Image 1 (cartoon, rainbow, N blue to C red):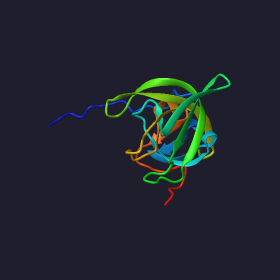
Image 2 (image 1 turned 90 degrees about the horizontal axis):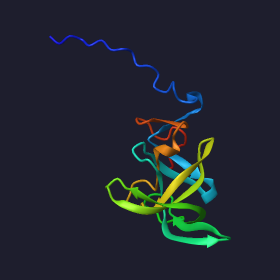
Image 3 (image 1 turned 135 degrees about the vertical axis):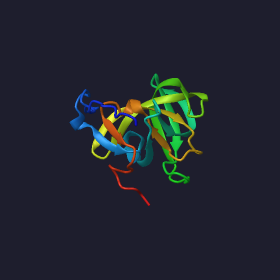
Image 4 (image 1 turned 60 degrees about the horizontal axis):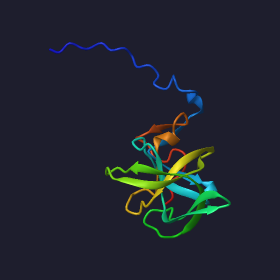
Length: 164
């Protein structure tokens, strides 16, 4: 017979965070918006395994305007659909080497923009890359979630309703 191991009860795992009462609980996938990029709705995978957020982008063009580095790109916000075709322009924060889930390194443009989920809004960094072959046009990485979100991996669309 194996003796039972007595363990201490788990303490609240979020008790040390700044203010868990103000954190939003989300599912593993959610509908979000990026208002500064005129993206009113995009299905997003909430990916705690990814450090950085990534947005599907194509026809990337870096340029300067009034001595400010910018990037122009296009996006199809819905999976398996080529419409709408949204043109976006954002300030280029930097170029950064990122490793994808397959272990490949890629240099990507990084932008900072406003992220909205339900009634919650804050600025996040996003890398731009082609995600045509991926299930989600956007991944929300853990750096965008720090002290703001808790993820329930068993649920989907806790903040917004699924679009048919």
